[in-house]
Length: 152
Image 1: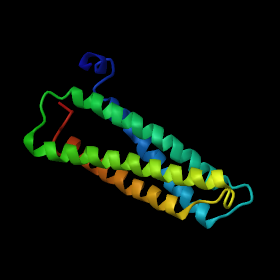
Image 2: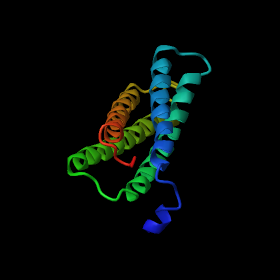
Image 3: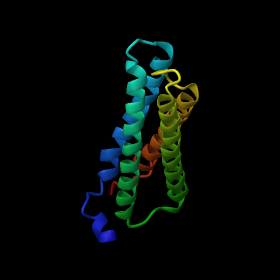
C-alpha cells in the first residue's frame, strides 16, 4: 500500500489542505450572512449548503493527502509526534463538525421549515469547524516552520 501512496508527491497535503481551509471559512461566512440577510431567493443559505458539501469533500481529500504525506516521513521527532497527533485530531474534528452542520442544514431544507433559511444549530457546528480547522492549520504550520517536519 505504501508504494501506491508514493504515486503522489510528498507535498500533496499542503497542496490540498488550503482548499479545505478556504472552503470551511467560506461556508461559515455564507452561513453567517444567510442568518443575517434573508433574501427572497435564499442565495446565501443555498451557498452555505453547497459550501458545506464541498467542505466535506475537501476535508476527506486533505485527510487522505495527509496520510500520503506522512508516509514519506522517515522519522517523526519525539517532540513533534504529539503535535502531529493533535493536528490529526483537529482535522478529524473539523470533518465531523462539517458533516453535522451539513446534515442539520440538509434536514432543514428537506423538511422545508422554513424554506431556504440557515439553521442556527448548523451554523454553530460550522463555526466550530472553522475553529478546528484553524487550530489544525496552526499546528501544521508550527510543525513545518518551527520543526521542519516534511521539509528536509
